[in-house]
Image (tube, helix red, strand yellow):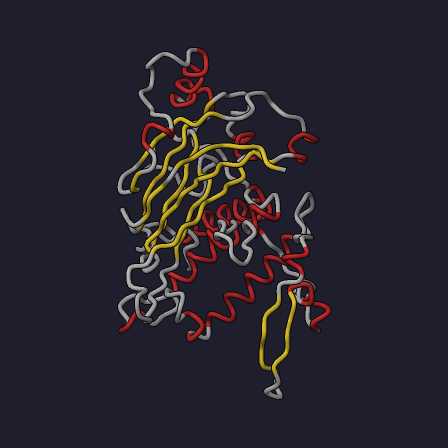
Amino acid sequence: MVDLDFNGTDPNISNAQQTSQNLTNMYRQMVSLGRTPETFLGDPYRAGGVPGGGGSLENMAHGAVHVWTGDRTQPNFENMGDFYSAARDPIFYAHHSNIDRLWTVWKTLGGRRQDFTDPDFLNTSFLFYDEKAQMVRIRVRDVLDSSKLGYVYQNVTNPWINSRPTPRVSRALSSVRRLVEAKAADDNNNVMNFPRPKEIFPTKLDHVIKVMVKRPNKKKRNKKEKNEKEEILIVEGLEVESDVFVKFDVLINDEDETLISPDNAEFAGSFVNVPHHSHGKGNKNSKRKTKLKLAITELLEDLDAENDENVLVTFVPKNGSGAVKIGGVKIVLED
């Protein structure tokens, strides 16, 4: 059974537990994290610009399946788990067909879940050879509706729709939340000793890091306000070694990072870097710069933390410890 939260080793859990984690992982990826085009599909990347961050569709199950399917013992790293060679495995096409299907399903979930309307996105073009060996130019706008390409995906049940994560412990029993409230009541006290982002970043993620992050809004918003602006946790200035499988989890107001799983509302999301072993000259040990954006509006509802001035953010390295540097973290409201 596939592990959509793959950390590099097979977990010692039952199939029922694995199924539960997979379903809540999918819910987080598709529903709560994917509330806007940017959080689901990623930031704009324009010619001459700096790459933005990928969305939840890429960062979570997509990357995990690549690495879970791959075999890093293969000579020259040629396997499904390496960016440059992944398409040599026939399962690549089934995997990416499913990613395309999930994109199609996502657009039926309502709210702001729709494709970008930016002309730079719609008019971006790619060159291919057709079945007659003639070069043709295809624009993004031409392939957003599969029915116009002559196919549709089978309408199947997606059980993850009803798999919203739940908090590991109630707010009344949560010592972390009581500490967060105490910190909000007296920002000058030392009740927790949790640092602020500016006190520890930038730093390598080679150990569990807990940091207190101030929210831009400390009062409960109504449904209209939430629909207009999404509260987003931004992990910025990420510098990743391109040829390393990197995965780290982000938790909010967690009790114990060793006990939190995708089943729990405290699990905010993950960052996954699928390795890219370039065999060209001058590219060895190259690094890429990116960022991670996690929509947390629904998560804060589930944790009953909408009125909190601060949240405790925990970064948990799961693979590639030390191969990623974090520049900073903040919470913003975005249109």
